[in-house]
Length: 372
Image 1: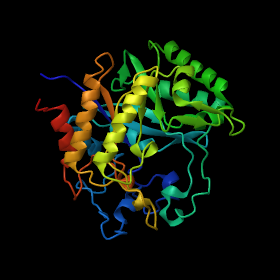
Image 2: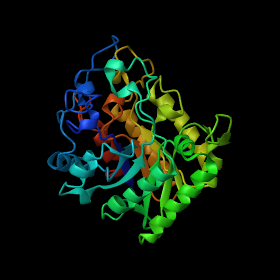
Image 3: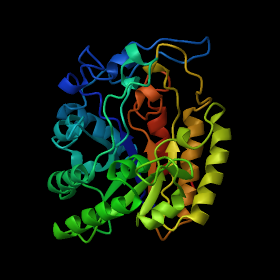
């Protein structure tokens, strides 16, 4: 039997039917499937609209998730990273996890962990107003009291579950927007104190510790003072100062030009991995994005679309990630994928009417049935 890899795909938990707090964005009552269903071709060579082979399913339905978890596990995806939200002093979009995954009878086949998607929200989710991105709906930055409430909820509800993904017994928790976290907490040192309290709470709950994972964007994070925008510190310094345990990416679009051929993008991605490996004090878990095209969220055409991201070329990216992991035998063989279901950003593993099960088959070929 070959080496086992932990293939972790991000989950955008917005395909869950009529949740009250999502109605302002998607009034049809099917979550962001509304934008997928209504997407149109905007250029002669634009490969939208696309349709999901499984239909516009409700991913907060445990029977739907049982089907999806079987498909994921059968193709080598054995971890899901749920985007997790907290706005206006309460959680948002938890139904996909709480009612779908956690109630699925086969969730032991695929583990999960959480990424705090602590970005602020503007009109992007509402295609009718997407041309006016300046309207702030929810601020993703929270103060120390809110951060402590978030930590308590995570420990009480999720970290102790059998299917929660851990490294060396430590539950792993990812933070998406570190700059926003620092802004809300009022500076770098207050952020460090909050994270230290989080670790202490996790240990008090009976775990050997907390594995904090940092989402990488470009190399610099601004506004470290929490007061003005003058502070700058390299991300690698932040990772060390705040004692993160590992780093990974969420999307190629966050750090490189994606408006070109996928194989050209991969060459730059490989160079970025090498740079991170040489400069960061903690392990990097390689990341592969399947594509990028967020036109389904906008009425006007949006330039910046990944080209030639066929299943065959995606397979080459996955092989690159496997080679990175094999070259780092001292770290957990974990990689992150964008994503399981980011349909409105055109970066998903789920089968569609363009490539069928091609992307999932690429994962299976590389991580379950490698030829070499």
